[in-house]
Image (cartoon, rainbow, N blue to C red; front, side):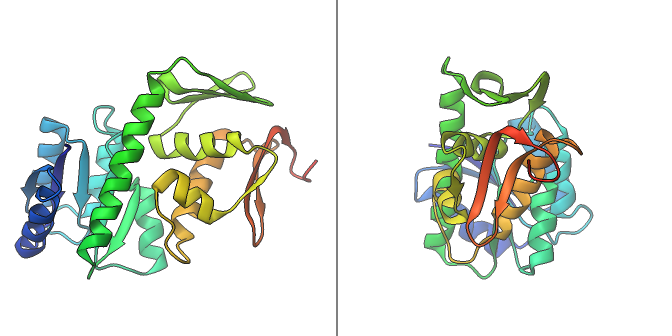
Amino acid sequence: MARILVIDDDHAIAELVKINLELLGHHVETANDGIKGLALAQQNLPEMIVLDVMMPDLDGFTVCQRLRQNPQTNGIPILMLTALGMTKDKVTGFDSGADDYLVKPFEIPELQVRVRALLRRAGSVLHSASLPEILHAGEITLIPENLQAKVGERIVKLTPTEFEILHCLMQHHGQTVSTGKLLEEVWGYAPDDDVDTIRVHIRHLRTRLETSERKYIKTVYGGGYQLIAEGFNRSGK
């Protein structure tokens, strides 16, 4: 099973998470502040991190940003586990680099589902990266072995989450993919009304793929997202 690092200054919460993830067979280490957690993550390179936000000295958003800036840790799946449940907090978490976001108080079964989904997705990305298959559509070529996309003549580096979203959209290019389908295929679950997760990651993916004149991902209001792999300009043509 996986090596998981839990970073939370609330000892009771950290122990609760540790015990329930160990019941699934995982090896769990804990850190009670952001500085120690960041150091352990960089030293031990866990396969997943469960990260609190409100911690003294170094908050979870900053820890997440620093992990994403480090080439050794930028691919580790991160689940933010925090009492900050406003939409703006979720957006800040995803902008910091979190893969998923669970609000306290939480139910143990939901935590376990989120952890299983993130580990499954990380495993599927690693598995696909070992395969020679290259997915091509229109102006975009997806290169699994380096988690890269070739857009025209540009090479773009993707995060594992962005890779999975683009892979899903490319498999259905020209079709509208609902937010629920993206959540199911990429995250492995489809909670009601959880559109913030998709919206922020799509924005990041657009930033990497698109230019001011050339677009590839179209929002279908009330429907989801559609990849126009041949590209379209700002007027939609």
